Length: 255
Image 1 (tube, rainbow, N blue to C red):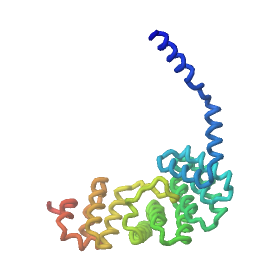
Image 2 (cartoon, rainbow, N blue to C red):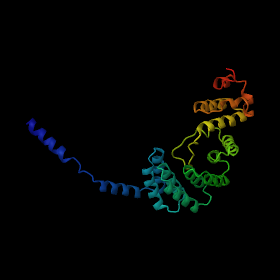
Image 3 (cartoon, helix red, strand yellow):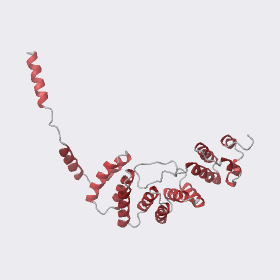
Image 4 (cartoon, one colour):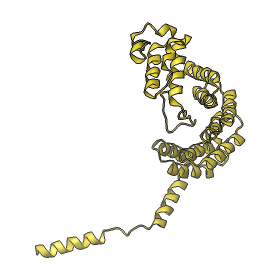
């Protein structure tokens, strides 16, 4: 009797196993799910996926939203950012350009076009787009950072320092903030990180921020900057020379 009951139970359990879903059926179900979502829901899901570093899937949601709102410059800009994350530069540029055509005052998209140019090492073109973004919003610290990096990469160091200094004036934490789901592409860095570090130390020294000056000097040293002794002759560091931390980072001549 117990054996019969066991066989019956297993039989029902087997009958309850669902039929395998094919890839085509799964895609169709997901397509139905996307079509039932609002533009806002699709955009928010795309933002979440991009924040989770899943740009390819984010693009699917943004494109589904775009079908319902084809005139959205904001959505084209976000698709461009996801394509940029995938290093699809042509696709990213095309989407940013579409965003600027739909909205000629979309400073985010102009900035992002500049970043595509920067990645391609066309620094003069990048500077042109960053300046367009700044013409629309001069108070955006990231735009100033990006323009500073474009100048820096062309060895126009005075221009670069001016832009970096303005960025810090607007937002003292601009160089430490990182986001994956925003709408502005930030240049990741420069090819000569040691020179950049020393320039940042000089900017903070000029502003009288001792802690940040020492932080960037330490980074410059760690990154192998070859002219660390300049702290004892550059005017910007004159007020820092009484701080014992300076001699620990850069021992003066004779030590």
